[in-house]
Image (tube, rainbow, N blue to C red; front, side, top):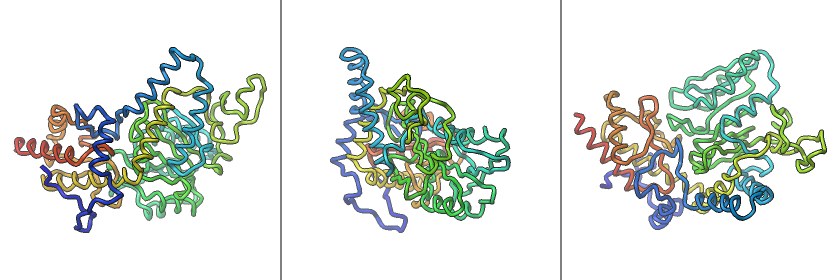
Length: 404
């Protein structure tokens, strides 16, 4: 059934326009994700499936390694340069500002370990951040750095709240672009401007937003953006990137020395050398090169669809879902304000003890989602259709009626 109507928050239905993914395009995209033949997959905030294009790119890479050339370092180096350019396009940065890292946590640790800290320095972190954006900063407490957690009653950090929290000792704000549990999409532009005005470094964990919400590291005054690729970007697990601004790089000392981090890595016996003048200085050597062609294929698909169209599509789907949950009497943990909406919606039944049974019921009916902190979390993507969202709402309605 299609009982749920998406509105723009002012009571007006949004008509299809060129910002939206058409039914024809949606069907075309769904063909690229065979998982849709078996499941309603709403777990992209945890791990995304690979598209057939990404899978084909990996298979071609493995074939080259296995049968055609064995040592394909030069070819993968060329592809890596292209991938850096694509990532730069995605976040509005130069490709030479991109370093490859295994995951978000590694990127944040590079920043935390590389800055010159002094006893009494203060780092601000919102409460309920994912641990990847907590432990690198807590690890600095042994150096006399204080980590101060800010309450987030609305689900995320509001700009004026940040302005009031900054003290003369505040040196850095560590923030997720989108909170992993509440799904709160931060106003990065306003927050970045406040950080700039107060001389506070702005470090962003982008894993829950990059690729599905427009990102502009320059406009938002972001000093560093760490991003694993296995969630919304639909890359293989174990591969991501770190953006480092040119001004921050001057202060950031690489915690590790690596042979690929110097100016001329191909000159093996020419040491010592100067560090590379770009973000490659933060890389230590080989990376998961099989992920490079898959990441390229994934980003090319994203650009084909359009990041803004993906964003509007997710806002529409989650608007339908939020309205449906309200009608069914379920509780939202996600802030319902459309201005802070992302790809994530977290919710729970009125009777909290029914949360896990509802999760199991949906899983048994081939709905893939997450159980997080006694809450359920859905996270659709650009190939998810309204029909799937409505089917899940129908399942929830059936469960609620039986539970009563």
